[in-house]
Image (cartoon, rainbow, N blue to C red; front, side):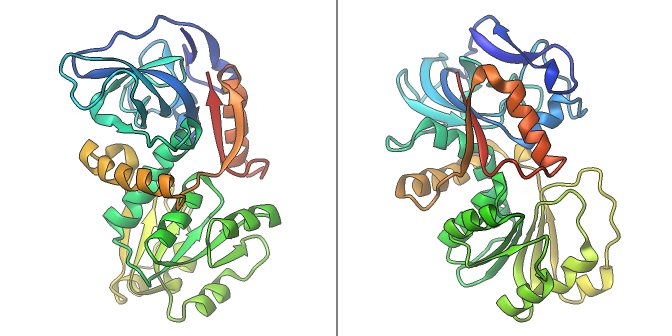
Length: 330
């Protein structure tokens, strides 16, 4: 089968595209014929050598896939050949990735794909959708009528956070870095969108939600807590999903006297059961049109290296050349 893989970590140039043996499934696994995959920042960190866990050799890159069941293991129930499915959590915790024509997936990570949802949309919603759902509902327990600020509403996760919060009945204010991206975030349902390069964010948040926001979703790698904490309401919840190496100062006093909570989480540590709860809502919202993943670029799988370059330019170097997710097709 054709696959995008690496034999050593490093820059995007280490990604090879060629033939590898089709995987053989175990008793609790499902063989999926891949229809679409999506790129996430964590994929580029692992490829570049982030020492989270040992990698299989050769290592097929990628976390998110959507496709059709080709074969099921002897212990698998609930999935049959021909079923359309999607999954995340591939290529993580030492598992092989999914940027290939076929992928062997542990059945407990698989989710059914609604009949009216294309593979591209399912793949583009996988990791980012589960991440957004875990943060908003499992960790922050956001409620209808509450206010949410998303620092980076046009990104892969941020754009899904905006839509899910609106689906839950929250009021949403978000930032983006250009007129094009601001328009895209507004189209996703945000009540107000700010340009983080030129607007007075603090003043706009106070005008939008006097007394502060109930939930503040931080997407940047180096949070400035001195600026963030004054923008939180009493009992506000601050969500962190990035900044593994960050060591910023933290204003403990102003934070705790308001009864606020600081909530950090990583999606790949959530259990299959927790992820399935998120997937059920994701499927329902995708099917109803309440959730529309913003796909910025579709490429053939053979261009996986170019996809990683483009993702890094925007994640690390803030080039603003990408608005939305990158999807690849075998």
